[in-house]
Length: 161
Image 1: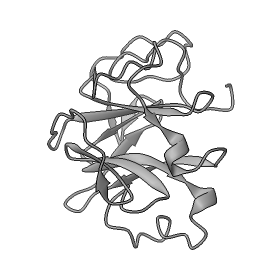
Image 2: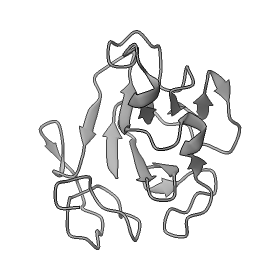
Image 3: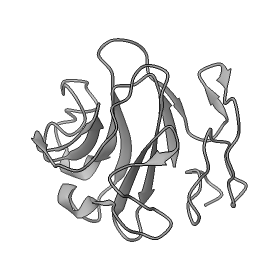
């Protein structure tokens, strides 16, 4: 689970399917432009540069985008300001995007894109850059501080997992 503020694209990359390091080198325009990743860019979910459909809320600078990845069952879920998108319910395991589309059994990492300003990421330390979250959501594991509630069964990525 992690939050992003001030970004305009957020997704999951499969490093095992990116032998040329196109995402790492920054040559891709946004997450989801090719088959190695899926990304929510404004209000469109992209995989292989194709709109995947669904119902997604547009966001703007200052909104907080959340991403929960269920690596065990192979799904990703996005939220905008604490509201899970596209009828997604990470706790119930429904409405997620199948990570098998970007390659199963991969090394999945977070990717974000931004063409107009800086991107600030909170991996659970409770800060976006030097700005603390304004209200800490609930987190059953007690690992990490996020702006909104962490779904039941999810936690911050850490060495304590």
